[in-house]
View 1: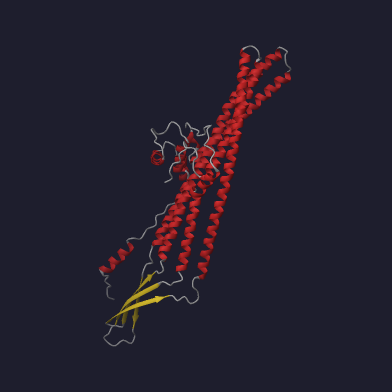
View 2: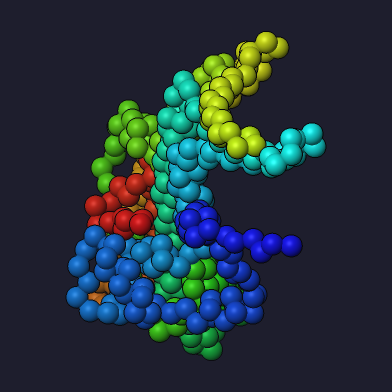
Length: 462
């Protein structure tokens, strides 16, 4: 048997065709290693510092900062939180689909050896044939595929922005819970001090025979109830700090020793007109823009299916070495639209476009309802806060009046302590109204998906 010699040109052809091939690299997931990486997350991470400095709107003079406000914690959540990792990964899939959509179909090559058993003497019985199959897309199908993939990629990018807002909104709610618990603890500590003084004063009066033991018992029960409320507030503080860490995407230990600044001032943004809020929500919300991009993708899908009514072309040039004769051929083929004209896929694409339009309209209606409800709740909560401010001002004035009478010797100590206790109750009621107004403001911000307080800057979401 003769040795077969491979020509260098053939080797170069094979190497050139395989040069662009990708190779598989395993990427196993180890739950234990993931847990260790999560537990090692801190807010002093140099990589986090670089990320925050690059993406935060304001300058950061030192790292780590003395106080962590909503903007800094939001930027940290953008770096750490897994929800954004999932959204970015989906965007990566959509961007890769753009590459897929732009690929042209590869040509094919065929080798057809034949053997002639009746060949004449002295003539090789082998007939060697080579053919190429070159597909040619028509009717602009490649452009429609690229347009559809680009629209879906743009929609995925808007979904990243929507996920970023959800991360920020959840973090703000957790910070508000922590703020409410800390302020409640402060007020209850003051109230406990006043009630302790009331118990002491009633015990002295009981010893002097001026009041009954029942009044002392009532004072002690009121103080003990405040002690229970104080313990509950401290429990809420511990739980809220863990919830804030979860909203950032770090373990609870990462917030130990961290001074958190609460961005919840008493001042609120001006009462915005309902039309302005609705227009802002309908024009700039990321989910609205994503739904619009998905509708454009459905339009491109319909154009693509309509273009498939027209068949693709296939060129098939070939060469045959036929027992010493060189023969060339040029093949041409096209599919015949005999049994259908792609009516089914066109109808499906039209139905999907109608469905996408209906989803967009339904989303707009839901956003309008959310913005109107949020605005109505915000206005009512501001009115309730004004009423609480008025009541607290009256209670503070009464406390000052009782203090003046007590200092002048015209009122007893219990009346003065009662006025102080009543004022602390007013402080607690005012805090509840403030927290309720801040929650209403958060819902209004969620309706438009952007901060409404100028001081609350929103970091970018790379």
